[in-house]
Length: 606
Image (cartoon, rainbow, N blue to C red):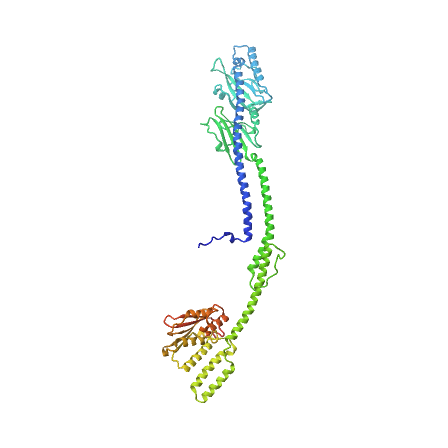
């Protein structure tokens, strides 16, 4: 079966999971808010740009219509007989020249009046008179309209350029007269040709105050607050604007809103920057451009109001969510945190405090009450088991040692030994002496753990007694490290193992039989082995079941189970007895004990 996929949320505590849940609930609102605003802004910009692109065409057409009207008026003035007769000549009488001057002057004045309440356009005619035939006429422009004569020294700076246009009108910023002051004005300039002699130039007709006429057309369009409208020539110089102070400067435009002055004819360009929207309508025929600069902030003002309402709703939603989060945190998570803290710190047997939130009847209250009650019941069971284990150990130890003969029997054997010695029964005396050693080690002054050296003496006495009693000829080899002789071992441990090795191993082998007892310290453990080379194959599986299973057949031998249980009672379940077959032949009983000492190790005393 494949391994199940681990839920990554289990790596977070409940507090982190709850915060993550809150963020997952709030994040979509912010994402929708951000995405909606972004798309709404783009949509609004595109729609507004398209609308203003149509509007700028109409606005430019309106300006061109006004310019066309001025052009027609200038054509009327040029073709008027009075204007065509105004050719400086010394052959005429002065009075005749005065009449001609007065007729043209009145003509210009009659046309320089406001129409339909709009701004007036003032017409002036500048005539080249190097011989000063019209000496009686003003040499300087005093009024905003009239006829003015000049010579080479007083020729206006724009005169030659006007002549170069060969009768075509154009827009230009020039210095005009207003209230006896020279001010900059936007003028429509057109050279006046003699209709009778096309090669001869009578003068230049100038229509001033055109900036106000153009501004009337600009102000007829309603744009958002902070907008800027600019009417420029083909090179980008501002002729007039909704901000009059910009006249004469070069319009600042982004590269994407620039016009290819060499190849463009007419059309509309739309460009957007971070702060503004630019819409440019241009005409190569008129050599003009009309530019709208619309601030994005002003355009999106109403949308910003809606955004603020949405932001307010979002903040209110977050605050409400935070209040609910705090409420559920205090109501749900705080008790669970206390419960988790109790579970982490709880150790079996320690005093359990009073159950918190006892008055709660919901699932959290039931869980906490059940957990604390379970801990108390567990403590009671631990204390009960502890006392029962103590009683069981005491009973087992008493049962394990109940076969030990009383001290009186040991004293009696000592008396028999001395009596047999005095009567000359040496062999019987030696056997009684060995039996006395067995009793002496078995009693051990009431100690349950003795030194391995004492246990070896007890085992040696048993071996000697058996060899003399049955005339056994097997060999016994003792290989015990000096460092191991001081370790503690339950008494009467080796004797049952040696007895099994004799009875089930070497008893019938004569002098070929061999029993080897070894003991070695290995770190913090001591390994003791009782090995025989018996020819009979031992049933290791049954012996292991006898050692470790409660329901094993004890008729197979109670002694080795006795040894195994006593070792574990004293030292724990990491130690005990085990059996294995030897590689050559025979059986090995292996004891593993902790290296604990009753007395200092040999050689460590000073």
